[in-house]
Image (cartoon, rainbow, N blue to C red; front, side, top):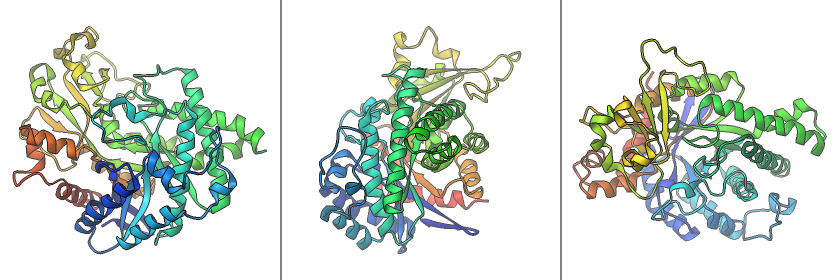
Length: 458
């Protein structure tokens, strides 16, 4: 477990440490000793374990020694090729001591991910802001140190980042996408410099979510094409590359990190999404193995979903209206392969706010899907409430079999929220946590073991 051999290929199964609160280097070290090390031993045994490490702004600045930075989204050659600072070397030594290898970094939430209210702040700064490019590059620099120190000596790794902006704050438009494309290609150029100076290829894994840029597969492919267009124009002038070379450079560093929970919330089949991405030549740098909540007949069963409303994270909802027998299935565009109409809500409590229902009634919908990450093994005795885990296995095994990525990450970051809900008497959350008591670390071990069996289930 942890490192999977598939024929001549090697793949890695990890879990994201964003589940554990840690914003300082001291908290990060304590987290690794107290949680990540024991969880990895429990799930993966005595061998070196792969981890997906979440790093925030404060930790990155401290790891790099707070070097003087320019006002643009670039780092100097001296910073890019610098040896690890004492603080960074201390972290590398701890990872070696605990027999942990960082195979990817979760750079999506770079601000406090466990503050009382995160919600839309998880997308800050957006890709319309040079700060996102600068911090992504700084995180990539630290990733290069992890690569050099890794016992596995990977040829390339990835950091997952938002795909663009959150549409609840920035209306989706050609102008917004052009701004995102500008800073993404700025980052690509600097990652190319990092590669030349260190020999380490660190990719950006753009992770679409409901109500963000390129949220459906078809929309993401279109958005990716716009980024490639910007790269062809920019790199021809800046780097003296041909248009074909410029596009190849962008494809090397710009990838998609596909979260199977997010795609299922969109009523998409992640397996078909992977096939479309492959056909479009969009590289996949990571797959998040995660499941969302789904509710049948919300007009009758909404009370089953109400207890899941909690104040920390954003829980976007997509509602499906069944098509009439005479309605033809759509051809692309929204990517809704189930037919019918999709209605999107920014957050779970909008479902019981008549002002947010957009003139509809809950009885108009036959199913809701909610962006609330639940453990892959979760099952509910209530026939109305279930999860989207059925689509995880086929997509993950396809990606593994086709060699689309070697980076598989279990990303149920809501374990502590689930524990709190269980303590408050939420019956569904109590069923997930188990009757024996609320043990988050044991739950993560169980989920990793479940994911390993699922990946090997042919």
